[in-house]
Length: 594
Ligand code: ASP
Image 1 (cartoon, rainbow, N blue to C red):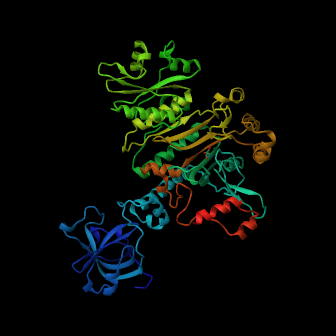
Image 2: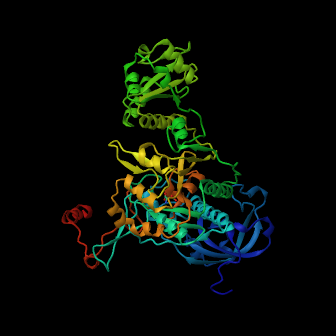
Image 3: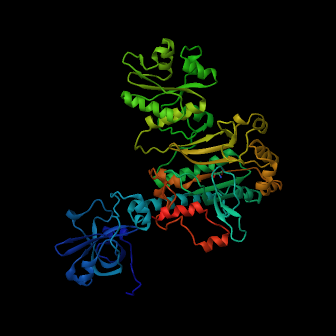
């Protein structure tokens, strides 16, 4: 046996069929137990765990080597596969029927004592896990997450490769593009004072590829958005980005479904029914108060406005006179105390509502509520009927602008209705998004991005606030998995969109002239989409936090405790870039260092 012969098979591949065979395995010491002189080691590698039996009298290795074995030492062991005998079978272990009786053991690498136990059951501070991510990734659950990510990407590639998609890389040092987030900037050394942006997505490059004659494109693309961190957001994240020429919305949705079906099948073994439900944006907002509805439970929003056409209740009458709406949900039997109800009201106020009306249905069907005295019998009966009220139910009603009512009831619905721990998987498509989001000050921002085709150009110009676009989303269990749209392929329409957005022609030319020019050279109609891979895998793995499926993520505050990024750099390096750090920032470092 040469020194470089480490293994002939893998620990997790062995079973009863191998009993009697002599094999060599290598891996990490997961645990070590001493039983009256005999040492039992659980040896782990990516395939699984195998029990090794070491008899100090068998001459497997010098005594000090055996007694010095510690957790996470890397060893190579030769021995004979033996049956454990019925009474010693470990049903929790895939290799639980057998063990390896060692005849030779070599330590390939020792390990320092660990900063935390690599046991899935041990709760470890996330900062520490990220600082020692290479150890954290040895934990079986984390190894399974890495595997799941790879499995998902493989399924995506399989679907797209079978359909003749071309995988194309696009640059990561680009010009800033307007996709709604803050750019991550990279200073140029050769042109001091100039900056690259890291792409928020490959959006314009994939459109250029359509103009280049690439028929179907995809890329597993890293994207960068300098936004505030949340559990499901990172400064850099990965998308499955795709685009196709001579494509309309249905062509894209068809491929997206195939991808979702393949990934779900490979990760969860579940065959999803097709086609996925489709809701228009308006329907999603009306019924669920959000553009990413969780339809795994009911509790749908009902429009009650018609009940209050001639109401005496001033709060409702005022809202309706101003063009607002009165809507409610039946939250079911929540059994909340007065304090619990007050908390709900506070929550509604913090979401921007002017108030929240709660009503509890009494045994005789009457409504107990602080506002009951302002509502006529007919109005109360109408509410009960519209919300299918039964004794014990809690009814929640909000009167306000449509956007506020939707936001508040949508959030309360999720809080009160989302069942815990069920493993139903519900994909759905939301279509017909509005073209623009209207700010409180009347300003317009693209709902998707400014390269999205309006449904009707005249409508977009004449009434942009209510104009529809040709954008669509995919939603999984109440989370947005990705967005896409049919694109603008006519340069005049593109110019109009910029104009409606208040971007002057000079500004548009300065920032996107290169792209507007490209559109003039025979642009095929095209459409596309981007799936958020981190989010998709984390939801399918039943993990609330995308960091669990990202090999080396940043913390909530954007740091990497492993490598220490972001970090300060030498003055010399800054000098080459023509950059000086502001004096007050430098002054702040003293505090940071203290
Ligand atoms: N570039 C878009 C995004 O990242 C997706 C698309 O429209 O294809 O959201």
